[in-house]
Amino acid sequence: MKGMKTTRFPSRRRPRTEDLARIRRRRWLFFLLSLLVGFGGGLYYGWFLNPVQYVDTSPDRLRADYKADFVLMVAEGYSRHRDLAWARQHLALLGEDPAQVVEEALTHAVMELGYGPDDIRLMRALLQDLRRRDQP
Image (cartoon, rainbow, N blue to C red; front, side, top):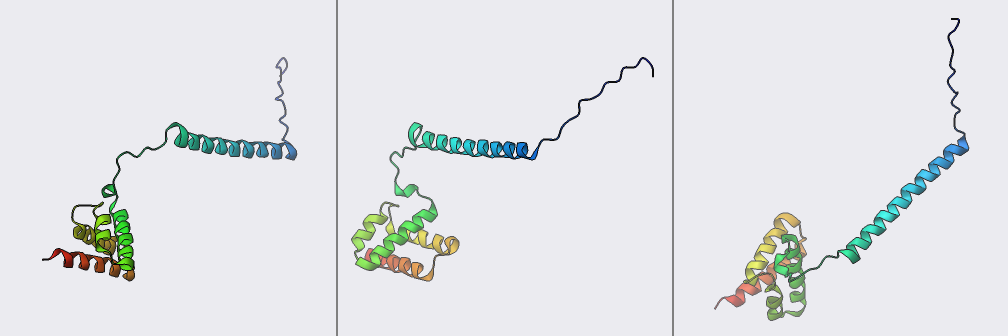
């Protein structure tokens, strides 16, 4: 083995515990700072640069579950005040025929939303009064 030059690899020293702790703190700080910057940037973009603008939106474009909630609120108001004209006026925002709107919402509430018996009773009472007043 004469004439062969042996190279020694530099020994790797293990990082000290203090160095590891400093590196971990720096990583967590960078991670949290990145989250804050991303969250703040998202809020700034959504609120100031490109906010949502609703134009000519009417309640008849609501999803079926929100329509059912709206009908329930009208039914609750009707049960307190017994003003059928008021109820018709508000239900007209959801469609042409208030009785049909209540019937669709009631069907959706019973079949899919699991409304309680008191809510269903209020909606049925409103539907019955609407139908009773529609008949000659």
